Length: 478
Image (spheres, rainbow, N blue to C red):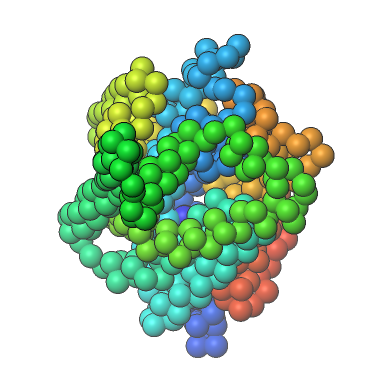
């Protein structure tokens, strides 16, 4: 069997025992490049994808409800998170979010996207597609970039599709034939350099700003006149502090345009999208590419498709979750106990970030694969697999729903809802994702956006309704 990976894309190899198309030369090219059918999927990878996609909302909900400045550390909310009448439940939810989900879900999602490169190219090449495999790969990711741009500007400025598409177009295809060991070494080096770059950029720039401002303050204390550069240094340090903990005036200034309807809200965040796509794709590519290359290696060595032994997965789950939870939990405790001092938080939470999230992602994946191999929770896992099979549709649907609830709707909850209550929206979205996906796939081959994406990629309208003779239920098995 083969799988749709990454964002619900249709990569996959020919299923073992699947019928061959032998209708002659006129049909050989179509067979070589046709999308994978439902019966060819690796259902365990659908589970991993659905799980990670739903888990990502645990983090993204903070952006939907409060904006990116409160994404990781909600220190600038109108209703305080870590003090006030609800500080205990708010703080508990924040700890749970960091220990069990932060970074770990997106890391697994990125790994699966990388695995999709292998699946797509192996399937196409095994069917004799030749150079057309590169053509399909390129067109898929060009359309993904466009979908990501539209998603970012028209719906949510926290889009990730644009960056995934750019990473795939620029870096992934040449690595499809690289050996597992070399892929892992390359991924490790890229992730290490990215971690150094991000930590150095955040901590280093803040420390430099503080040090320069201290010199300017010393001159002011001696009643000396400041130069323009020294005045600028004071402003830079003030801006850095305001980004970390926004003053009340800034909080309301950021909330006001998000309360005035669709056009006001989208116009307010459009600059975030532009700057993110210009800078993020350049400075942050190491994050996505490193994890995607790791995912390619983990597909090739049998980890992601579930081909390893139960004992191996058990060891990976125990070690991965122990390391991931410990590193992240200790860091979160140190940051909280230090009242979220900027530099203390950077040291304890940003410096070991990659260790915690990669270990946790592998542990989560191993635990899920153990459950699948053991045949437990089949009803629930089948619905999670349905979400994974329609990952692109569910990703965009989640954005539309959350933006309607918190920003565009008549409730005007953006910026004012209690922290712990935003997770009610997460739970409700999970239930809807699973119900919607399970019902939809009873009648249709693909999710609605998967159908659009496939039709654009192959430049041919794909069949949508399930034919009775080819219908295959969503199952979970190895």
